[in-house]
Image (tube, rainbow, N blue to C red; front, side, top):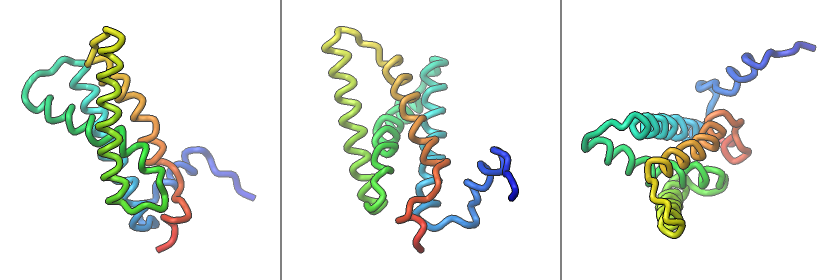
Amino acid sequence: MTHQSTAEKNSALIDFGAMTGPELQRRASAAVLIALTVATLLVQLTGATGNWRLVLTTAFVVLAPGWSITAYLRSASASFRWSVGIGVSIAIGILLGQTMILLNAWHPLGAVAILGVLTLVPLVHHLLRAPSPAEATP
């Protein structure tokens, strides 16, 4: 009976050659959205300026939070998860803005930072988790 170290187990989780199409799509999407989230957090926290900041932040707010939730829908198609994910992201953004207005606490930089950190948790989980039974079948 051999015992694998944690590093060996984690490296076995990300064996791209053994992945099926849906699993590879999920992990690739999670990796891209993690990069988008981290880039948005860095831009927001450093105070960088420019038109690209608006594009980057809008892309994050519209894509990442909702996809991180809807990616747990295992039986749904990828297009369904993305479509619903965009709707969920927009709803989260509206609710976040309305909450800040209601509480008279308008702090969009803080809201994006909190949303980014909260979004990173499920995104990292999607990157590292084992394939679901629906993803394992070719």
